[in-house]
Image 1 (cartoon, helix red, strand yellow):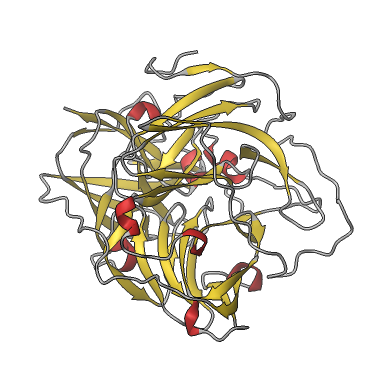
Image 2 (tube, one colour):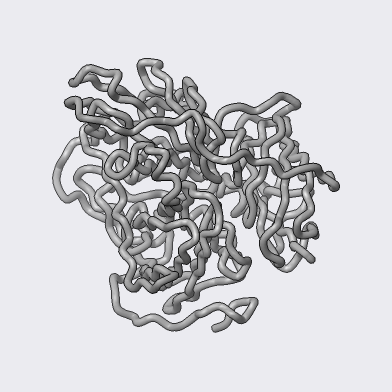
Amino acid sequence: MLSRRGIITLGAVSATGAAVHAVGVVRRGTAAAAEAPSKPFSRPLLVPKTAVPVHQSSTTDYYDMAIREASALILPGFRTWIFGYDGLFPGPTVRASVGRRVVIRQRNRLRRNVVVHLHGGLVAPEYDGHPADIIPPGYYRDYVYPNRQPSATLWYHDHSHRGEAEMVFYGLAGFYLLEDPWERGLNLPAGRYDIPLMLRDAHFDKRGQLVFAMDDRRRDTLLVNGRPQPFLDVYARRYRLRLLNGSNQRNFTLRLSDGAPMTVIASDGGLLPAPLRVAGVTLSPAERVDVVVDFGRYEPGTRVVLLNTAGTNGVTRNVMRFHVGRRVSDSSRVPDRLGQGFDLGSATVVRDVNLHMDPRSGQFFIDGRAFDMKRVDMKIRRGETEIWRVHNRDRLPETMHNLHLHGTHFQVLDRNGGPVAGHETGRKDTVAVPVGGNVRIKVRYDRHLGRYLYHCHLLDHSSMGMMAQAEIVG
């Protein structure tokens, strides 16, 4: 098997491993014990396992993962069948270093094609996870990540053709934390005080199994790192929380229950130039923001809830709870200056990008067309700065969209003509586009030639056609 570019390592894998089933016909689990439904804040947060390289050279860390079916303890009393990287939900966290290459061999032990995309990674097109670059069942593909970009909270997930919504929903997502030795000199909270939090929603049946339906409005169970409404024991000191909205469609507007401020230090693409104190943050699907919360302001024994004020009831409003313990020494800080500024310069090209859903067919379009991987929708000159005016042409409340660009980071200039604030002032790869409104972004592809996707990251929308591709030319 060769990729569409014919230069990717793609080989056969052994048939060993857990039994696999196609999505939609996964085995139904049975209750492990006659427990009551999970009470909010009754189970501890699980921090995803850190992946361990199978080999290290002077320049490269090598990993080997198996994409397979497994069971996960998500709801008490049930084993839920999932698709997972190494059978984990979420997948293992890859900790990479700026300037040090990572190669991940992804082995497909499912019975359907898979594709892996490093979201936010500035990588060559052949390693970006284009839907045409499949890993067939029983084969593997090597993904090469150079990590020549600012340190940031990235993530990896499935990007199969018309299947990414389903596959990510069933568990194919994990953190990729790109770190820089230089950043350690800032003395931000680190180690056990630096915690990735993947937030998402889900729909379960009475047997505790995930239920996928396109554009499903019944995903009313909130999960953090694969557990519903967990708690986290924290010391009375500063913590760095890496917040990722891993939902297919849900927005989160997050704040602390006592109204205390959070300090935003990073957005999708890395550190902001300076920290920003905010009352809360709003994340559309795939957006990330790193915040520092000072639990040292609380007395031991205090309990603080992370709220989703966009939720409509206690189930969708209460995300997780922090249990503040004893005071410990804390040498961390948040300096007045963090990263470098981000300015792409003057634009020479202006484009309009239109997002729209056809209510008659239920199909989703960019510029009036559904995705066709054989079609190039725009050609862009490498190194040339452009302004994209991104319009949401839909007006129904449920037709919010956002836009994610592969292969680059961009600046958000304004939304509906007004300035943006908070994490949206930093390097971005995903931006929310309001119902009936627009955003303007400044874009420059300055790395590689070739084809990259741009699409709505409400994955049900992209799976139903709201995706296009740009070709970067010399």
